[in-house]
Length: 257
Image: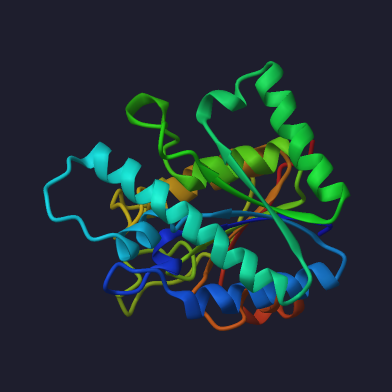
């Protein structure tokens, strides 16, 4: 694995009270820094702007869902990237922010410009931190969630692997709380797991396991390996590299092209 896209979901970065979990964020940064020392290029797709803004700003009047999304993400994205900046600076890692929209992935000049921007960042040892531009992306302009965004980034940048960090270990044969549930460790190209996927959304984000399954299926078909793992597990990123057999996760085997 020489280039990995890592997507960190809202449920991983958010505490039970809905605010940003800076301790977990710091632990994940430590692991990403370790990955870079192994000569692995990292592109980080990070949720958490809404949670960051919600914890920063107290509003004493009602806002509709679009207003909340725009306000909290606008305030929160600044704080989120500022935290990443401070945490990565401890490892002398430079970061750059990429805010994008769904229309930027349509073939054409915007697509080429975005790819060129991220390519020059990687060539100059800058770690791209990607998120949707929530201040202007509303209703039909939105990505389904950051799972979809990370999949598009992985394909655009021809990554070797996409890692989707959630708050469960992967895809199970039934609800993870069921004692009879078994983790599906490997998914062969073209295998249909829809019978095991529930439609629920995550607590703090727009995604859920259905979204991750959809993204993983599409991206693996393009020849990129996809891993769904639990971002709340200690040292999950380093363990996926150093001892994958002993680390719970679901892996989608890429289709050979």
